[in-house]
Image (tube, rainbow, N blue to C red; front, side, top):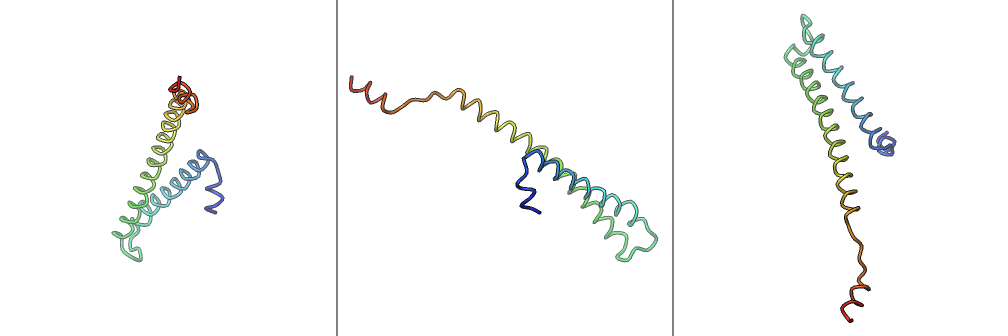
Length: 101
């Protein structure tokens, strides 16, 4: 599964990651709002409150990090392209010929 995801393009991987974060967010929301408010859950309310809050926080952090990575990757690609356009090629052979003249 991981090999399949890594073979995809960057934007497709980002969409898969955001989809996974949304799924984790929904699970965390369900745990936080429904299971933690039950009368007598098996492990106690506090455990489910902490678990749901952790899932919600991690999914939100995941989405933020994915968007930041995409933005940084775009800026890095643009910077590399500008550098490539401004770079002038010179050949050492030409410089040696000029020095000898």
